[in-house]
Image (cartoon, rainbow, N blue to C red):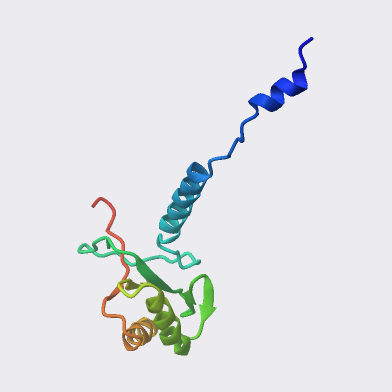
Length: 139
């Protein structure tokens, strides 16, 4: 009679689980999430942008600061004071130094508030500060 247990013991090989494909897949997923998280972060409020015939889209990642119609300033989906613009932009520039700063001001906001925000951005060390606008209808 054939002893099944003895036959299994004799042919038993050590089986190893190859972790290399799993580790490779985890690195690919990590890279995917890092790349997609580097996308533009919206301001968190709805702003009616003014139109400009010379408006152009910006290719590189941007730090967005919004000014609504009541002259409230929003950065990273939270309301901040005009005196906090410089510190917030400095922190954002420390994370990504090559980023441009875009001030998204509502068409009904006070021009003086937008100028103060842009000034705070420049004082924070931003070299590329611009004001957001939309293209007119039909262009």
